[in-house]
Length: 333
View 1 (cartoon, rainbow, N blue to C red):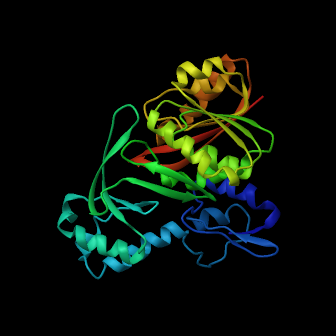
View 2: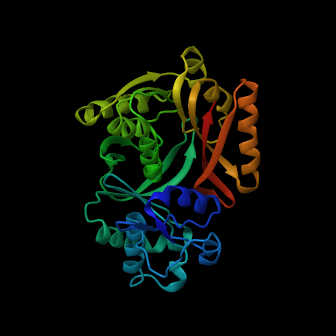
View 3: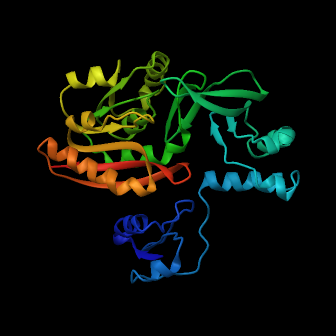
């Protein structure tokens, strides 16, 4: 879709709302126009702007996955290729899914990964979440016997121990989006802070004061290390508090902005709203048929607090069929 530069953000929001924006591809920019990737040209054309037939490049992570497919097509037959799943790179560790249909091909997959990512030192198979902190089980099938690494993202580095903490590298773009939304001088509360990926990315780009709360002792220890690791790069300040969000946060003052990367199965909406003066970014897992109900619930919770608010809910990733990880951007008045 060919869009005048000054209308880009407005049109992009509309395309996302209509669920026809192709987030797997990169826009192309010229001096006067931006070409936005769309999934349905017919629907896009009805919006009254020009649709042009150009092929926009895949985003790097999508292109990398495509590169792996190309390598594996020489090693796996077409039936086996159907079972290939997306993988993640965290530092120098590759995290893969290995369905039963591909277990006999694990070394071919490892070899292909090393062709695409020669810097890898570990290849591990993803298992199930366990415990209150949603730590995954992993089995190492190649390389060094460790799950600790330093991951680079959005201009910062953070140490991660996948055997002890939860970390999702797929939220890289979302963390950058929040950092660009925040303004200098804000006071920010970060709930369920983990090893501080959200806090570090925001503090990298903005001169803000962040109060982060996390219960997992290992995540707190790594978070302290990560603040030191990035201290020279940070514009903002981060205060890290170890404790239960539901015990610590009620004792804290209100903040300009609250960010809650809420763990699955946890309901912290009313608590997060009670501490937000201007903005709340609340993450949850919602069935596609219940997204409107989720939005209405947030508005109702705001009314209970005597506040008015506007809510935009965006899908971030698939969790399971018809269930999405979503972010509700709530503007409070």
